[in-house]
Length: 83
Image (cartoon, rainbow, N blue to C red; front, side, top):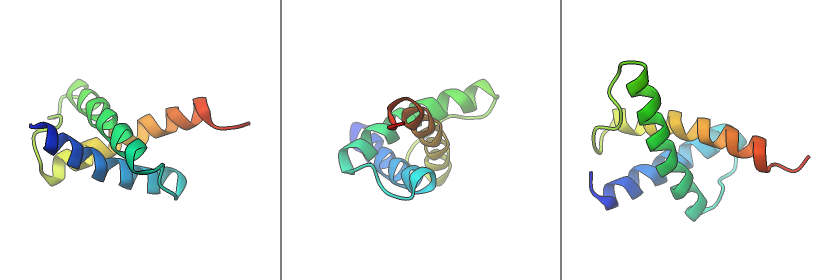
């Protein structure tokens, strides 16, 4: 997958995951970064469970990336949220 596709999948996944986790976006750049990291994490999780990871620019890959981005956002908020 090319870098532009990773950025687009990351943006979509980061945006959807941030809306699910905290109902407001983290900001454009942070959504993209957390989404790309989420795609990597989601790919690893799905591969570990025996399924395919991110396979390209398609709905399944966006789903995998969103699941990974939700995991990344939950960990991110657990570490960096004010107490």
